[in-house]
Length: 287
Image (cartoon, rainbow, N blue to C red):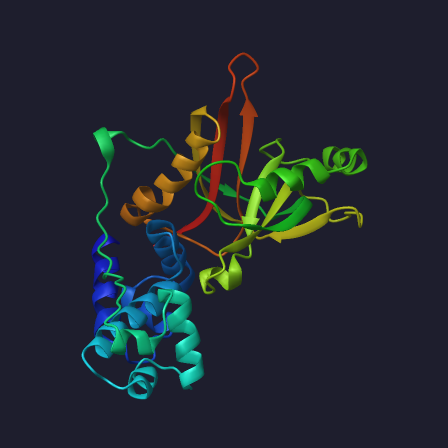
């Protein structure tokens, strides 16, 4: 997968002035569109469309410095009008295209290169399980994607759950893992947009279909799950495990992630402050 990622980066570089539809890029990578976009997001920290936009604007900046006209540069990189290009360029760089021409102002955004480093030769513990269809039942909210630290959006969501909602979740829970889970799905049109939001649900797994209006119900089809247990300081260890799944395990495994909710659960240690056992569940299929 690492080789394919770098091949795609080269392909993007050679076609910055062409139509770079996500499905064409993923087909070139030889994996599913969703898998490629999700892996790209977790490895780079940005969506594929954001990377392409940034590379185009960086090259546009170079062209302006070399004396090309703003109108020519705008249409060269796919903008339908001067106004669209000017707004995008200023938002990205902090200055106007005319400033690049008149004052020689510039901003760079280099081409990416993916290198996966496994530190200390530490193996990642995991198991593979097939699971029948179930529903996620709980309380959900759109929150910002966040790689490190406490996500305040999730904290507010947890605090909003009422006793009545907790009671119903407990009654519905009837399938492993018998834990309250944190599930994520619907990430900005499946990692196409740049905003970086996703839907987060705190709830339980159930095979029951009767769920009241107090809770949201998300159907999950039968599929295979890659499960990653981890233990240590919370939330750092959980976040590091999640990052390792996408940056190290998936690119080198015989599996690809599918478009279904991923989830995790955490059991805090009562005797150690900010210490927990967690499991990360990722929906996958064999390549």
